Image (tube, rainbow, N blue to C red):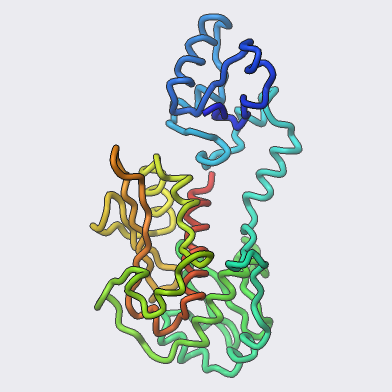
Length: 305
């Protein structure tokens, strides 16, 4: 593969076509080892980015390293401009955009909030283990963070260190409102764990509605330790179900199980998602699809530097 650990694609470089310069390759590749040895022999030193990637077993800094953009990029003369690195750091701190299966932006219908305003929040908290903090506000634990739902204002908020501030997280907002509108009682957990094909609306999860695990495979397919680090960062509980498997809690009483198989010479790496049977009592198939996508996004973001 011609792309270097730093992200430069040598396929589009004339120096590579002319044979003047060879690709560094991913940080975990034999190409990287060869390039570092050549640099040391000819230049008396090595590229700090490539050396760091090889040392830390990182294929691509932009995709795989929680420390990007580190000092090796920001204080070095290349390969990216200061403006590009600032853009990367800014957008990595933002919640990524959320899209429906038809690629349209996710929006929360106002009537969903209107319906929630008529509910008894104290009762909903008893059923969900959310925490009532005022007459119109509840706090819930989403994976590894506290999120406030302001029913009066119709929005989610996160603590910015100075207080609760409105946050743009439409997919999480949508599934949270749906959850509170649909829950009718305290549902027991742990009676049955099921896969997508075992759900009553299994036919939904086909074509554009298939669970979006391919991005997770692109990121972690050859990096099981990276997957484990991300799951632990999100307060996942290890379970004995696959080569690596974790129970994750987007809501205190709604577990999702992410199972990772490393693959071998015969089989490609694989990631699948299992559910507690009780999920069907509070989420329709499209809401389950959205919830899995939001948790998958959190796994892709992984530990932050």
